[in-house]
Length: 544
Image (cartoon, rainbow, N blue to C red; front, side, top):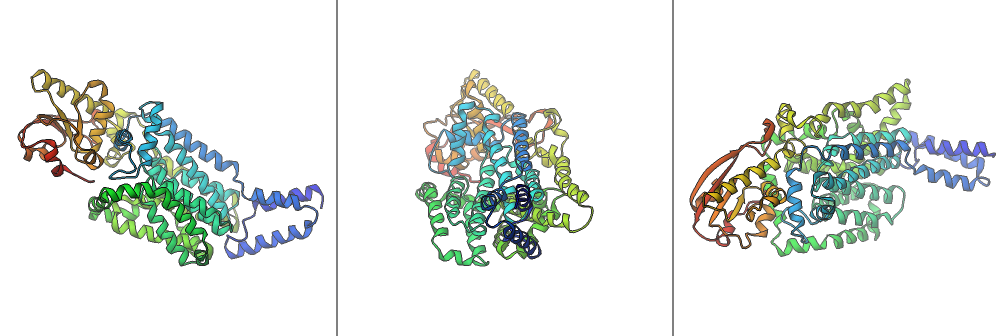
């Protein structure tokens, strides 16, 4: 076989779908092609065959371009508007480093503390989430390759994942969600490599990814449970009789151990948080909107791709374990926390990857191949263009009030407007009380967001100690703060039973007429405490 024949064989192999992981007709076609190539060149092009197999695993340039564009967009808009509430909270938590917290493991606050070296600003905090999103996009393309997709399917998988509103919105802010989505995708990719390519050492990498994910968000434990159930109920069940999955699980447990130890020594507050999240996210409206919300999270025009992916996962025996895992997670989220449908979106990448593989088969199954391909590529892009102004800070901040109410109350857009103004308002009232001879000895806020804003943004105003009864702030306690005169932010009704006098001073309104979750906040003062902060503190705890 001459050199041109060898190159043709390589090109044919690169564009073919891996014979072990596609549907049966495609498997037979690929197997026939592979057999023909081997028969022609068995003794002559062994090195070229190895090179072709290596190219099999490569991702086309389009996948990397999509991932790079994703990161560029996220970084480009990262400095618009301002911090969102979780970021302010994590900055504060980063100055109380611990092996665990009431509402999350330690990784996100630790990373926030590290990025402090770049300056306390939203752009610095959001670098890691943007890179995490880019990595998730690349992994989606890799999964499509594992599931039998060629060049088009791999790019389509990456593009659909990058255009998914849940990923684009989540990776705009520096909380636990970006790393959570990355961890789920990484674990699934490693498990697929171990099972579909028969590379058992990937179980160890899956364990590392799971352990780091658990140090970011304990919900990764749900993924491990459903994967175990899915594998036990699929054609891969025999792998559970080997040591590899259990070694990976042991690695994950070792990495997770510090947070588990912290939880155990502090009364397992995460269980109380889980119950609180259920209460706050299980209204009739939450249940009614769970399924539509999940489809919107994936993208307005990619629902057919999601459905095709689920069908592909179910019909392909070697991929059925992912379908089982996905079904259980979706049922859990819809039944327990329907108001937080994004908890199930860690499985979006494999579903879209399977859908992209199925879509590629559809492209080549009939005529008008170019038209079909263009429609599939255009769908996620057009859907994103329609919804993008509602999930990223694109409109001028002065026009946010014209957006729908749900957008004004979203974490990525409306809730990132107004924190400097709230801090300035509190500082003004603190100065006014001081001039009137009632200098505040502490500030008490109703929510961790307000406390975080005052601590992070109020340093130049020399505010008194900032306290709150919510989540980790309650755990940190009042320290040596005095409750002689308390400047109260959004918590007058909470403190009134414990003070002789509580009065309203002013009401803060978010700027630019934005109706977000942090407007119409009452600011007041309480004096004449019935007891010290230490005595009152057990009555002020609030998880949520």
